[in-house]
Image 1 (cartoon, helix red, strand yellow):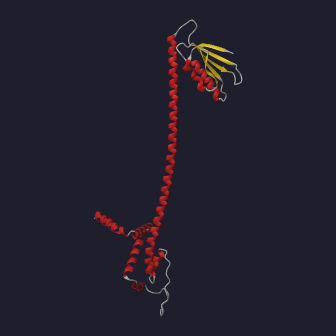
Image 2: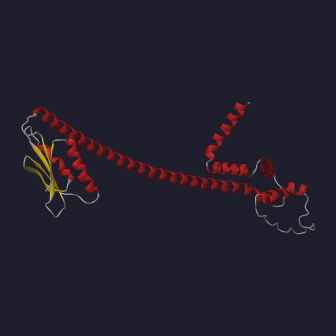
Image 3: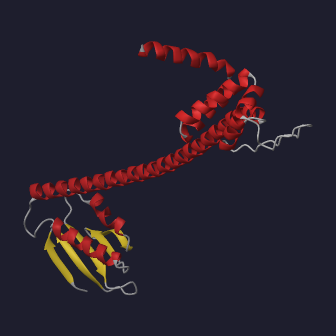
Length: 272
């Protein structure tokens, strides 16, 4: 059983501990014991958490601390590292006490650092969890925004269909017997309503003059047709759809018509 005797040196003890730590990290923990003045303060174990327990047994009159490192789990062969606080025949209480105080202070500082490091790791984990939850919530919000946008588009299309149906109804009523009405109806995709044959009509089909057909329409219908012609001449397809959407909205909400008129009058006064 080899014995290594030295004067107490905290750096040498730390070196022994690091050696045990390296072997433990490799998956081969090594058994050890710690003895203070012949008293076994740490029985044989391979748990490094118990290595520093000897510090609680250090006193002003402590003479020796020994560390036994066993060769293997199934043998009692070991190497003994013995550290004396006092050399034989000499008394150095002040120096010994100072070294002990320094060791204790160093160990306490290291434990405080380990505790603080553990707290920081916990806070980092909490922050990462909160970040993940925030990202998931942001994704849900974005999906909801997309759904609302799609619903809004569908609602505008329905309003456009409603406005178009209103104008198409006017065209269907005016299209009968009017080339102008038929032309507008065809432009908006309205199927022409076939005319019933008139008894005694000897003119060829479709031969009626434009002037005669205009006379068959009442003034209100002619005004509507004229308005549609102006819209088709001045507005593109996108603008036409916008007008239809506005008409459809006002049809569903007639109470807003006065508001729109007031806005238009205010705009005209501002420009003037």
